[in-house]
Amino acid sequence: MILSTSIGIELAGRDLRIAVVQSRFGRLRLLRSVEVPGFLDLAVEEQKATLERAVKEHRLTFGRVFLSLPHDRGMVRQMEFPVEVAEKLKAAVALQIESLCPWSADEIYWDFSVESRKKGAKLFRVTIAIVPRAEIDPWMAFFKSIKLPLSGVLLSSVTHAHGVRTLWPNSDCTIVLDCEKGYVEGSLIHGGQLSSVTQTGGEANIAAKDAVERLAASGRVGAAEDVRFVSYGSEAAQLESVEPVILPIENASVGSTVRFGAIASALIGIRRTAFAANLIPSALRYRRSQWQTVPTFVLLALTMLAGIAMLLREPYQMTVYASQIDSEIRRVAPVAREVSKQQTELNNLSDRYRALAGHLQNRDYNLEALQEITRVLPSGAWLVSYSYQDGNIQLSGYADSTSAIQKLLEDSPLFKDVQPTAAVTRDAKGKDKFSLKATIEVSR
Image 1 (cartoon, rainbow, N blue to C red):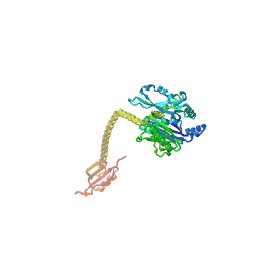
Image 2 (image 1 turned 180 degrees about the vertical axis):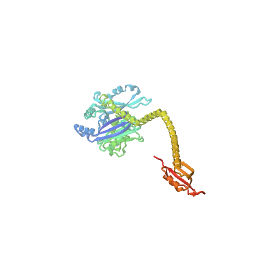
Image 3 (image 1 turned 90 degrees about the vertical axis):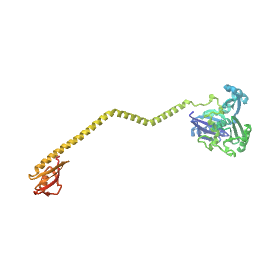
Image 4 (image 1 turned 120 degrees about the horizontal axis):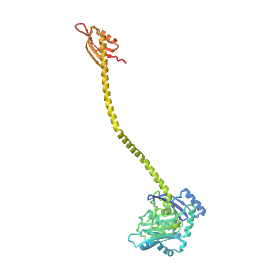
């Protein structure tokens, strides 16, 4: 599954430990871990009240729940079967159950798990776990009453092996030591073999050393072999020769290792290994309906689609807008070109009109100026030169008095700013040679 959450509960010594592990896209993450010291010393009602508070405080109402019991509550055996019985393995294991345990078939729960068969191998190993119903039924009823129905129950040695194979799949030899007050429980996972011992004693350090020696002897572990040690429990800090390890799970620390059993129990609901022997019969296991997750994933998909749509909305609108603009430009381009052509022609006509109008106007002013000059000049005066440009005139000629000519022009309503442009000289006949300029007063 893309996202799954599992709750592991371990009963060890007199304590109860809880761990919540989540798998997200195959990556494991420890969400939280809780410990209730002295849980088994409490009365049943007090146990319920304590766990109900823990469930509410730590929000433990989601995910499947798996319980790990001390391995001395039952028994674990490993057997080898020929590959020919693989298709009828359950029936073959059922035939061996009565010979493996001292209880009758109607007094027990049992389950088995199978290692991956190697190509060409003639035998394969099966791990069988057996527990009296009297050990499991009360706990199933207890956890159901506090709304934590169990999806599985395992013995601690199987839980240890499953946790080791999940967290260190390539490890060849690992010893797990559960150090509690009064005893040390050890599990050896050596290849596909599983061995378990319980060593009682006052000092955890001595009990752990004896347990390791017994496991090494039973599992034929040589001194030169590279052994990984995982120690946890209330007395794990007393071990002198075992260094604490950090579990390869996100959000796990050195302190998280003391609850390795609960974490390994939670891993039962996330991954399968050759040691996942679940002692609750399939019909009694609590299962959450997968349909409950459908609305969540549908909403997640809709949210993602809405987010993608929001991201693509603006570029899409700009593309559509640009396409519409291009289409409109293509539609009006011929009209715009015709209008531009007509505008150019109109501008040319306007320029020609202004030039013609200016020319006509200048011609009118020029004629009017000549008429006025002819009117005001006395009979004894004559012009030698005359010019007109942009409303200004220049004239020169001879008269009895230059100042009289200037005065006549200044008195005319047509001229203003009459000024001489050269010094006055006289000719041989005694006439003044005048040179004057003036501005035509345009009537408005």
